[in-house]
Amino acid sequence: ALIFGVVLVLFGAIWGPWMATRPVTDLDLTQSLRAGVAQQQSDEEPSPALTTTPPPAPTTTPVISSVQVLSWNNDDGDHPDRAINMIDSNPATSWSSRWFDNNQFRDETSVTIVVKLQQKATVSSVTLTMDPATSGGEVVVRNVTDPANPRGGTELAMSALSPTTTIQLPAAVETDSIALQFRSMPKGQDGRNWAWISELTVQ
Image (cartoon, rainbow, N blue to C red; front, side):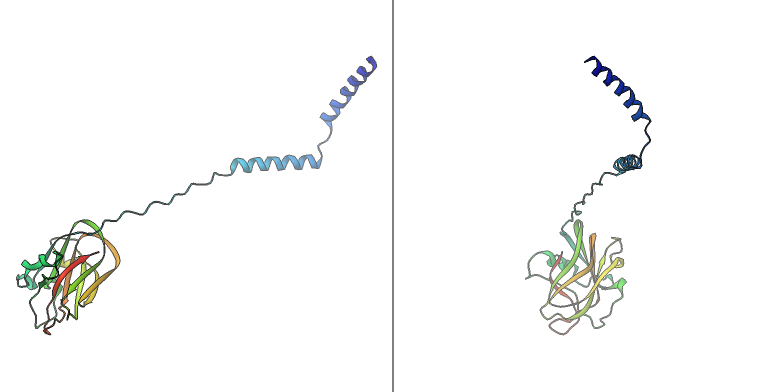
């Protein structure tokens, strides 16, 4: 037993220094480099970015609070007192302009319907329910940017007229007031140039 112990001590004394001083092989160096690169990549790899999709912005449905008729040449000759009939939800009542022999109007003096909303809302179209014989004419939809000058608002769309006229805007607009401006009147059932509207709605 004593001899076996001495042998173990001698073996350890020789093996330890030999392992500490033996040359590093190519295999050892390659494994060490791979381990270092893998650790560096792991340390440098960014965490995946969290992406969220924002919810769509809420839109407000347009609700008409009032309508006003600006008569040709501002002379009150186009029945401004009947404007309320266009938004009373009663197709039996209506508003009409006078009839015109000269059927071309300048923007600054044209018959214009100013539609005011309860609050700012997204407007994408306007619908007019008119005389069953309505045809032709030309109406312009404007975004009223200056309440003191509704005829001079931003032009949004233009359309001819028919018994049921829906004017689709090229792009929805956020506004609290629009204007419908007649550059020329449609023809009614009597063949004269005039506008007759029983209902006006904004979508």
